[in-house]
Image (cartoon, rainbow, N blue to C red; front, side, top):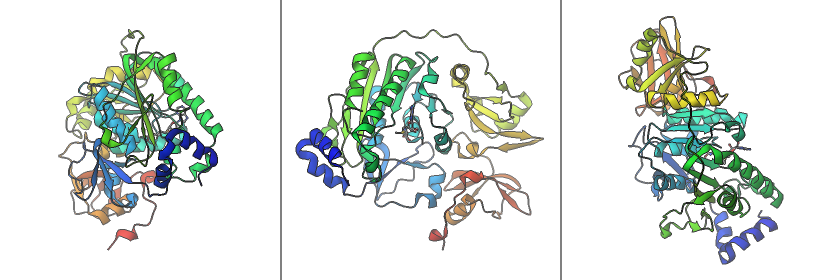
Length: 452
Ligand code: SAM
């Protein structure tokens, strides 16, 4: 039920468009996904419509049970609301994505926009995906691992904890926690939590996040501020705060008018009666001033040590392009691969942050055996020549339920794939095959719906 307070707010914003807006709220929300072109370009169905502002985005005719699609678990696509894919278009327009950039996704969980940024950025860009709420860091890590790119790193900090990284980033995305008005159609229960007071609380929190983010950008660095809400307090007033008090200038975007995105005093608004998507606010700002940080070089990670060269030879064989990586070992014996092109930047982050999760954990060595991590199975960095076993959809779902299967395959480690994409590891011992899917990744729902 739309409250009177929300209705009058929307009337003030939309005037005679309000009936069309309210009618749109009664419609079923469109279902959209964004394909992971780093993993596969051949999965687009011809029956799907393209999202106009994101070449990898597609609308699906109906909502499938994504849990029962092995490709979902393989990170072949991310289920993402279409309006928010506008960030892809904006980023490509305002940032030099042909060059490696240092990028911060400050409010990152569950990771939808992190994977979107990663897809648009140069592969040597360093993307720090940060989430302050501890209970949401796990799902962020999972989605980042599924996406499979080695240049993403997850951290768990309050935005103010990043304060020593003055002038470090070229781009910061603040996809702020908000009152969520734009998602009322997808989640009608959220309407009950909305109130003018909660809008004010959200706006104050957003202002604090923007204040913490601003110094972390280089001069001329870009700040993308977005919310999934409509009200002026969270959107326009905070955008004005950036322009008037934090020394940013707005960067106008060139959006075709037929897309239906509404220009606001600051930024752009998607409304569900105008675009095929949910409510979403997007604005892009350039930092006007500030000094380029002169930073001392950092020569080593705090706790990680270079991997012994005999072990480097072992792990290199699991990578398609091992020369692109430096290998390290953590005190807990986890081996980490770091893109050599970004090792220096990661050392700076490692010194500045208490986070221990930087780098891409690829496995451990036990005796003579390298035990590959689940993240390595999902990674685009993995060597094409590794022994693999291809499963059909039913077998793949059994594997994803962590059932043991028998394969006719060579002994030893096997990359388990569906449609060529990694799902996890199995180890063939001859008389049985062990399923190495981490138990927290296991599908818990019944898979009977698709069998037969
Ligand atoms: N960017 C995410 C995505 O696309 O998947 C969605 C982010 S959601 C809109 C906002 C995030 O901000 C949530 O994960 C929430 O936990 C986090 N958050 C909540 N309070 C915060 C705070 N005070 N500072 C920074 N982030 C906060």
